[in-house]
Length: 475
Ligand code: FAD
Ligand code: SF4
Image (cartoon, rainbow, N blue to C red):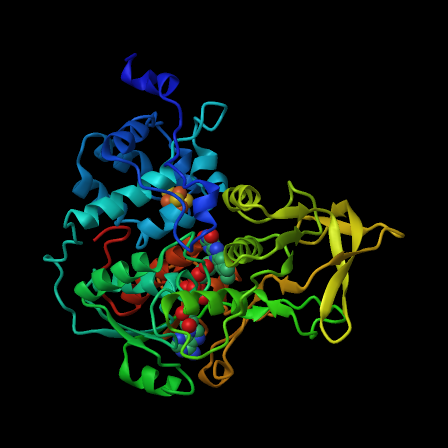
């Protein structure tokens, strides 16, 4: 073997093994097998330990990436897990589902023809294997403060907040209207990207840290928000963004047209045995058309393929390069048999009594719009109809503020996101000084890792507001 620091020249990037397509599409299980220990250590050893690691800057939680890669290479699995948890509350989930190509791995120095270090797969490996080997967060030094904080929402933002509070001796009580924790990690993202047992393991871990979950409880109808304000020292809101963007297309209410999230959730509840008599949206044998090009659209494509759809076609109004969905999920969709039609904008959903197709117009990319992305401009005279028996609308999500925010002085931005301070001692506090917020309800629909970051930062803001010294990024 050449010099250690030239190891990357001899050892190419090797992703963990992936199930063959025929096996993948037959079940709702994760498609990547874990590394074995020697492969994980070797891949970690490809890191150049750059002096100023851009991967850390590009990672939204600023993970100490080269340091935990080094620990793993040296066989110090528990130390790597401990260090990984100092900056990330859900490393095993981010390792699985972050769009690494545009975050940490996109910024890796080796991502220049040599193949970026497989940071995500190694992050997942560290936590999965450490937990299997008996590692648990060491909270022996933590002293109870007697303070209590209510958290509304057990999604990534709420879990990130609860993690930091527990590590500082604050009793976190997490309310969620769903029967399980995870937010969209459980009731949104399909099991072929993230198996639900991974989320359940995290629940056990957090309960072991003293976090209390009150599930199946909707704050508002079941527990008045005023009761939380009265009973707790502070409240964190991590309630997500759930208003589906409507295309405003004629024919959207025809039978056979379904919204993306209810479709995905119906399948997950069915798989988990939670459906309890609810109708299961099963698209076996159907010609399915998915409208949209984001992560949600990719998840619908691949769910329909696994349900045994006769065909799955995905249309997106911009081109391949400008499609927002994760490249990995796009590649996996194609491998699994999804057909993509780019530069197609839906104009109307057609059918008499039931959907029979979608009228689309071809587009070309024009000048950048107000958000900096090039606008898709319809080309006159290019309309055609794509036949389909089922249409899934996946145009994204908008903020969904609760009706009780105003009466409690929780102010909103003009687009419905909750307004917070993002800097300073009281970071992520809302316009009600006792209430903090983070995640999709503050940023708009985004990523798991950014929600985790905001939940953690809000916890530091809460600690500051309660006069409790916080070990920033540590504990
Ligand atoms: P959520 O995860 O939405 O959690 C909010 C929680 O609050 C929910 O559990 C909800 O039940 C609860 N809640 C709301 N109101 C109340 C109330 N009144 N009382 C009690 N509980 C309440 N991101 C990635 O990084 N990678 C991906 O591959 C990816 N894929 C995605 C696929 C899909 C289909 C979707 C929809 C999103 C995907 N995302 C992905 C985005 C990611 O899931 C979200 O950005 C992230 O989950 C936001 O976290 P959050 O905690 O802010 O909100
Ligand atoms: Fe990369 Fe996401 Fe892990 Fe950060 S949290 S190192 S962006 S996979």
